[in-house]
Image 1 (cartoon, rainbow, N blue to C red):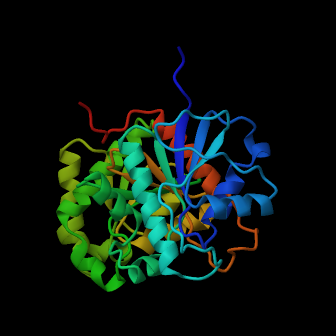
Image 2: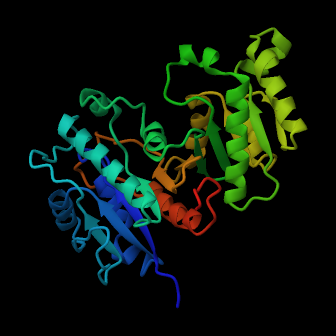
Length: 337
């Protein structure tokens, strides 16, 4: 008996952004024919039905975990009803953020329970989360808390680049004190484990320097010499194929041309500026260290585009494709027994 098709959960994210639109567009029947997996759209059914009508696409049937899966490639699961929720494209609202958080929680729980094989998350609004009293920096930290993951990282990939961020959404002024040898070692080890999960054999990893020119031997800041370099040496002694600290202005060119399989950047814009230059419309974010598969498109809510039906679904399409690909492989952080 052949195994059942994968079930990929897709949270709609902030209802007032482009998340619902790109999710529906990514599942257009004419786009891929019959996909080798089922899509479970997690969110407000009424808003989704209205969007499907505007896009002239069929409205997926309803479903809930534990129920038989209908003869359809996509279904809608509304785990929590929000009577006060209204779709107001382009606006930041507390109601939309509370709903988005509830859908993330439900999707994560469904993955942990085995009802879903992977989770793809559409963008949320961090300002809305803060207004709603949801005190998390972003999806990554929220998913780590929900799954009990202690070691986790944010990897983004697109084109020839795979980039892991040692620090994520924090002020640039706070980055130097956050860069420690244990942090660098943890992020590199997670990167190496992820490359194996993705099927890469060599797992060559470059570690960016924090300062220009990787500190110039201590002349332009001491962090590279005193913190990053000793961490890299310790990782090499442990058998990892890791190199650094490498100057941030050249290492991404080298990685894009095949010298490295992944780059660990020290802060958000150091890693994401080159990646988005190469793969703005097709980048994908995958959270490392979770016992579930989670990917997302590499873009935000794009409130300025919301409601216009002009959003590009390429990144969401790729996020769904990569989620299905990873779900078929052995997750190195999955819990067994």
